[in-house]
Length: 401
Image (cartoon, rainbow, N blue to C red; front, side):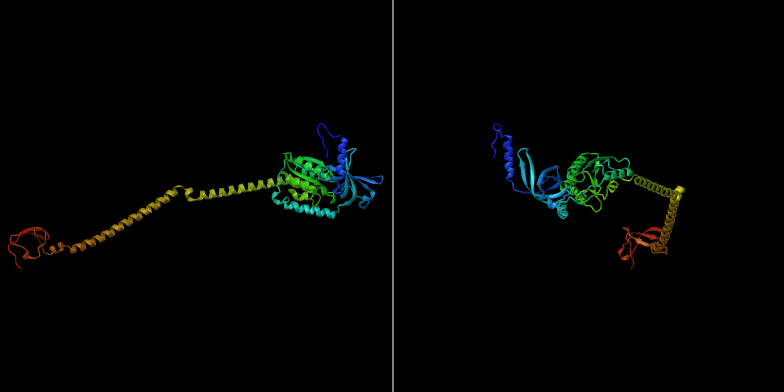
């Protein structure tokens, strides 16, 4: 370990040699990346090994015999390399000395993508609950596409054909190859930061399985999942299914389909407005006609046709009730009078007066009691005699049994 200080710094050559020593002690390692810029000279092959997720690469050199089993390698082929890291103390550069090169097959890539798909699905990144609805009419549409691509033309022309006033914020990037993930991610962050962009379309015009691999990169997929702006994925065709399609808020089968999804058709909207306007007019017309008929019906009612009808009807009812009350009262009085006559006759027939009228008299003593037994009277007692037509006083002379 180098012992240095500000008073006793280490020279560059010493640091370089120390770094070389550290690195030389590393054993062989397996590295994965994309191969590009393959050059052959003097029996050696030189190439660049890129990381598809970031703008970073390393130099790789090997004997032609190491590269021969996988030759010819297509541009941007995915490989794994068993290599020894070497450091050049002279120019301070790192490189890999390859001992073995294996091309990653489609089957293995598919298995990796399936594993990543299950991992992201378990995290809920593809859940329908987190997908955001598209705005009816976006203020500005963000578009990420290839440079001078037909996909860009399809989206812009079809969108403007549907809604001529639509505005685009276009970012042309690499949509395949080593720089695709980095440039697409940077463009996505840039459009996400623009407040006027209400929806973002990421598109390309299809391609092979290898061409679409950047759109299944884990970093790009997670970035798309974290965006607050709705994202429309239009990568490839119906049979293509990169992971970006699953995390996007809306998947479009083609760039043309994406244009149809993000902006409404002005002709259809006008037709819908006219249809709704006509429906509203018919509704108002029907309501007015119904209310007019109701008012006419009310006007035909007697109470509105002749308002005095209500008073006259009530007057007739009151007169009828008064007449009934009068008849009822007269009848009740008549019955009471007849009953009174009968009662009077009965009382008259039972009255002592009737007896008196037949010539009898009632003898009362001075205290008002009726004299019934002559033995109870004494001589000289004053008596009152009630006759049919009046009273007279009398005095007893003697009593007889």
